[in-house]
Amino acid sequence: MNKLTRLIFVALIALFAVGLVACKKEAPAKVEAPPVAKPASEDPTAWEAYVRDVVTRNVEPGTSPYLYYLPGLSTTDFQGEYDRLQEKLDGDLARGTTGDNVVLAFASPSSAKLADLMVDSFGRVEAGLLKGAKVMFIGDSADSQRVEQAVTPSGATYKFVEAK
Image 1: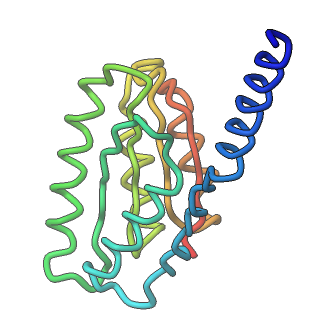
Image 2 (image 1 turned 180 degrees about the horizontal axis):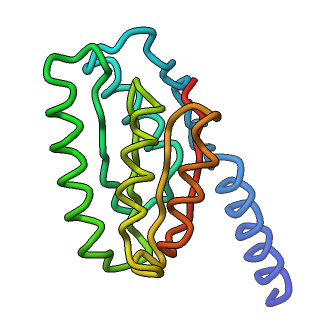
């Protein structure tokens, strides 16, 4: 009788385990939204949505992205916007970074002007000051190489994302 009781007990456990496995529901597959397309205009609202999407897709969880956005050339007071962004960037870069979870993301409808700004500002950064930080340039491939050359001495890791 003892063997029969054990056999029934093992059989019940096996049936219970099979039942649990059969009832286990798979989590629904996460549906990823399609990427936001690069805006055809210089509309700041459209660019904000685009840049937010690009940055979200290209940073690792747990990182702290800081966005530097230069509006398009047709913006009223473009030169003032350019000068203020350069002043802010110069101050931020002079302070350095506090860890490897920092991403400095740069974007603009005017890739060439943003590249000019970055080359100028990163040219004044002390070598190695941004070690561990990541710099993401969202722009035209024609501007990437000169931006990378300006960023590399700072010690930051450079990442290019073609605006498209």
